[in-house]
Length: 202
Image (tube, rainbow, N blue to C red; front, side):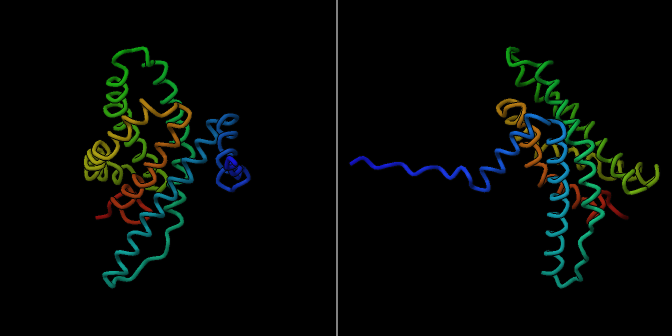
C-alpha cells in the first residue's frame, strides 16, 4: 500500500505571515518595504545596545537602560529613507542596466558600491544629525572622524551580499534581503557611536 503524504499545514503562523507579507508587498510595495525597513533598522539598533550591555555586564561595569529614543531614530530613518530610496534605486537599476546587457553584473556592482553606498551613508549621517538635534559643527566633526571608516567597513561587509542581491534576488525582494543584512549592519553603525547615537562622542 503506497504511503500517503501528509498535508502541509497551510494554517501555520509562519506560512500565514509570509503569505500576508507577499500580499502587502504586491498591493503596497513602497509602504511595505518602508515599514519593514523601519522595524529591522530599530531591531539592529536594539541588537547593538543589547550586545553592549552584555559586554559591560561581563566586565562588571554598570549597564545602562535601553535607549528607546535611539531605536526610534533608526526606525524613522528606515521608514522614511531606507525603504523608499532602496525601492526606487533597485527599480531604476533594472531600467538602466537590464540583464540583456552583458556587462550588467559589473555595472550594477560598481554603481552600488561607488555611487549608492557613499551617497546613502552620507544621507544616514545627515539624517541622524538632524534627528539628534545636533548642529553643523557636530556633523562636520563626526564626518571627518568616522565617515571614511564606516564607508570602508561598508565596502568590506556589503560587497558580497550586494553582488548576490542585485544579480540573483528578484527585484521585489531586494529591499527585504538588504534589510536582513542591514539588521547587523545598523548594529555595527550604532556601535560606532554610543548606544542610540550613531556618532562617536569625544
